[in-house]
Image 1 (cartoon, rainbow, N blue to C red):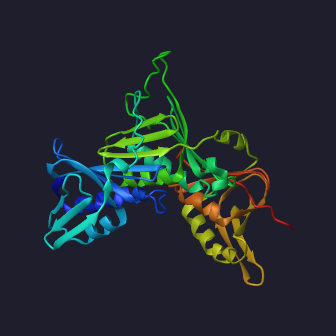
Image 2: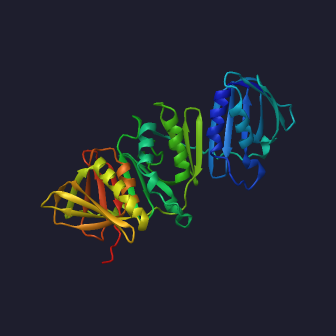
Image 3: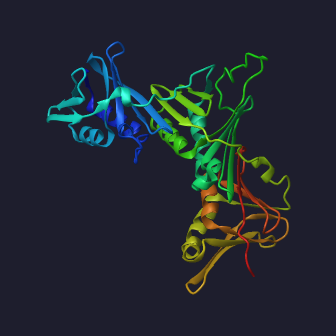
Length: 387
């Protein structure tokens, strides 16, 4: 293998694929990144794969001799990132040799790799018609829900985001058992829509739960480069593959049935509070200084006559604080307590100026929705206050 490529492109590509390299590999080759040089296409492909998440990208290179080898991801990445950006990099390796020579204007390095044959194949399921998604809308769906997924590995199905796709559009949902974020996106599919099932001529659907870690990398990958090119999604036998530009992200899907989250959302409410979102965030963050000292709990009391909310926190033996906030209050007065972090996460996932809190009783689920921006629903369970 022999090729010449740009230091900047190689460094950024290595940073990207290294995110899929195992930190505690079960096999030595999983700590490596796979390099594949192709003289026919004039490209160098890089792959990282930890048997759960795989990321592949490619960059232009002047390839003199095709070939493939794996190199230690951490050491390779650190050397390349420190080389001069204005000097091209030459990578060369003799056939059958496991040593790679890396040459730049500043010097020459030798690295010992492992054979490409030892590297596991990326499960690139590309059977059937891909589902094409608008990258900008997909990013919006992921940002609105990823934060609500669980970090508790014991609740494995909840450590992912559920993607539901039908002819109406894409629905992203995540819950950790204490809160639920759902975003319905009606324009996620480009003009051609969902692929048609050959059996009965109807449009197919997708119902899959993907680990939050994989989707965070997908969101980062799509956000880093602006392109209107649709993302191609393939789902098959416990694997999901996202293809976009010259990049591939592959992930296992999570086994099991995702909870029927729709039935958690109450159909009607007796109380409704409309408030300025930024003012509410600012007040909560100030009161949270005290809430953090004790149990993260803040109380929100509504006053229909005065048309305001009172936000308060009481940290025993430390102090207490409260703030009043103008609001449009419908229904009777109520006092309800929340984990302030859950409330702030939901408010920060909304971009609208005004938000509405819909509630029934101090112990039943509360819904946060943006005003004049339909599609997003955030459910949060109140904290029971012991009087």
